[in-house]
Image (tube, rainbow, N blue to C red; front, side, top):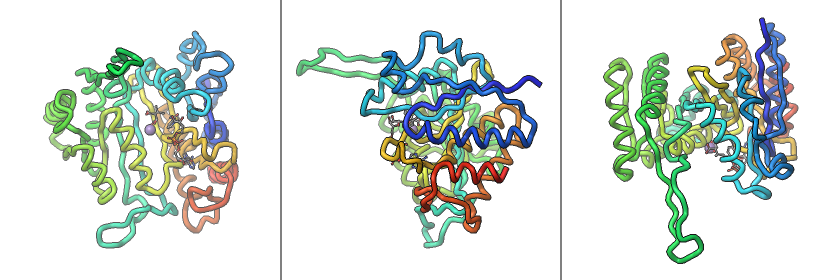
Length: 361
Ligand code: NAD
Ligand code: IPM
Ligand code: MN
């Protein structure tokens, strides 16, 4: 078989530290399951590249990575040198939009050996696996729109506007994905995040499309909450959520909150999917470049490793995905004696933890 062609973009900060661990585990899984890989490394989509070239991406970036089977991505952003909106709109957000990665799938699961910061109402602890949700974030439109502008700049009449955009195709396709996903899970439960009480045009539209589509899914139990109280429910009863579908901004917020409810954002993966496979999908941790710990070699690499597993799954290698997940669970298990990074309460390095996972494959 021809090799899987993976474009690797490590980006900034801890992206440079966790991507090698993702590749270490990817390599171990590829050997075990006889998967041929071709890894092509690119230095663009980083603030270093920006400082050298005055832009985040080369003009022909789509030709360079658009033909790959998938993109393995680290993190972008180094606000000390490049404003975040310049670096992110110049790279990651371009990939999501131009490659039409309209589903951002973000699991949040309480793993063995990771302490949840939350307890149940009766005072007892959550057991591993008891919190297990999939956040489906709309990833190409919504609140992340480039429609708007600044008027009367620099005067006291200054006004800034940024429009929220929801198209019927854009809303329906991500809802369809979420309903199908909910249907495939044992609990068959879909929660929609809304704010149709205050955001009076786009959010009622979102609710209307959810309602319309639910007719096709009578077997899926459906509820919806305004985003404000939904964040409270995440904290007070995270175990009751299964699939949660949300607009771009609400999904962004929920996908840091969900993993934080499971102990650390350092293990949370994400899959930016173009389900039709017309373009490459992109797999990256939920977290960013973490300038506060970058360069110290202590970032947790599991979010990156799990993202690589999601990539293998999407590319048809379910058994390799499952083996990586089992290796992560084995290493995290309380009695494994395996190294733990500081966010997991230990003193191990990024490479220690990456090696431990790779050895379990
Ligand atoms: P962040 O996710 O980088 O960091 C938030 C906190 O979590 C920090 O204290 C950090 O040390 C910790 N953390 C994050 N990942 C960790 C890991 N793997 N192991 C242990 N601790 C970890 O969020 P931020 O500080 O808001 O953003 C920093 C930069 O990253 C900004 O430039 C931001 O725009 C960018 N960012 C990029 C992405 C992305 O590329 N997808 C995502 C989020 C933020
Ligand atoms: C994420 C990040 C990005 C987002 C930022 C860095 C633009 O927070 O992937 O969750 O908001 O989508
Ligand atoms: Mn985010």
